[in-house]
Amino acid sequence: MTESRFDKKGFLIIPDPKQILEEEQKKKVLVVKECFCPKGHNLMDGHVKFNGHPGIRHKIRKANSEEGEIVLSPVYGEYTRVEIGVDVTSGDVNAILCPECDVEFPTIDQCTCGKGEIKAIFLDTEASMQHSIGICNAINCFNSKIISYGEVISHKMLEAL
Image: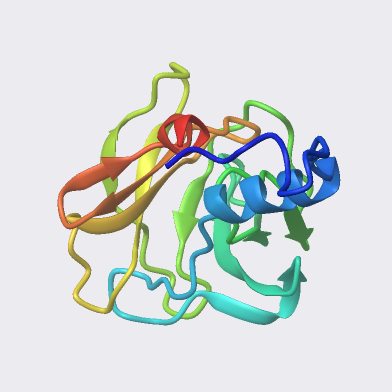
């Protein structure tokens, strides 16, 4: 059944653009609620929030051995980050580590940016590549993907919904 453009009295129905935008954004938003390092440490940080959601905290180690932490937005497709104790430069490739145990995150694949690698952050404590988030370890490369039980979900797919 298609929606009518007119109400019961014959008046034209003009949709509220703000309401339409809010409904479309609700359909497309994917928020990571939990994620873990390869050893099972929780990476969610309630001290740094993005749109009311806890951020994803990880440690980075630069090529010069300088270390710091970055907290990423858990909203898929939102590229906001908070840098803690480190200055980063666009294009730099860094090791991504657990802030608690210093274990380095494993590589899923080479990134299409040509500089970095897609590193796995796990969606459960099992540390399965079949249930993970992949992020590029090059600063300001926004290539990422979610692998949920073997199915790859890309941001482009969410835009198409």
